[in-house]
Image (cartoon, rainbow, N blue to C red; front, side, top):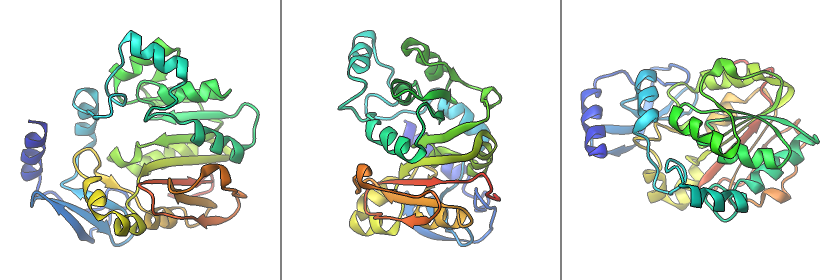
Amino acid sequence: MNKFEYLLRSIANFSTNKNCPYCGCEKSVCIDRKFLVTTLNECVNCNLYFRHPKDTIEFNQKFYQKNYEQKDNITTDLPDDNNLKKLIESNFKGTAKDYTDKIQFIRRIIDKEQPKVIDFGANWGYTSYQFKNDNWQVQSYEISQERALFGSKIGININTSLSQLVEGVDVFFNAHVIEHLPDIKNMFTLAQNLLNKDGLIVIYCPNGSDSFKKRKPMDFHRLWGQVHPNYLNDKFFKNVFKDVPFLIGSNSLDLQTINWDKKSQVVLDLSGDELFAIASIKLQNF
């Protein structure tokens, strides 16, 4: 029924404009298609891949309160007390939400004893919990009120209003959030306002880059659609972050072997299914 409703909504909104949801450019090229009426388009200006028909901000707010589901048994399924206890005792190791390597990687780049992080799109708090266990000062934000409330069960206070977030952080972290957003530019501007002068935005998302598409074309086709209206790629990030230092790579790499000076623009191997982009955006003009 969920897919059928999505198809009906796509048909109803088929005549809406194809302006890029990031830069507003009216020109794009179709690079993939599903069910005849939904297309993946590349903006000719900023290179964002985006789905048409698009969703409104109002629809996005409603969808992520009740309708959003993932089938990994942890992202949107709130664990019962017994399973939650096991997850906490293991610090989520061995699960799809084990962020240990990512957190250690970012800590090496930041090089601070007790860095400050905003976990943007915190869901029910599993990433925030791991940051906190690694001696980070954590602020969390989540659009879903139900999942945010659940965070209190593991000692994580999750804000549901952007106005509650406090500036002066070292890292604006978002993992598998940007592909869902109806307004990416607003997120970049928010991050810029909340980061300190040496702060970094850190993004993890499905990989829409050509290297991954060539290696796994069927997976490329599968990873955009109803819940992923944006499909990020290295061309978009290189374009958006063209005036600031950045590091772009994928999960084909061993994070513990990567060294970055925070001054250069570096692109690593992009063949993995998860893309990451790290940038110093305080002086960026979005």
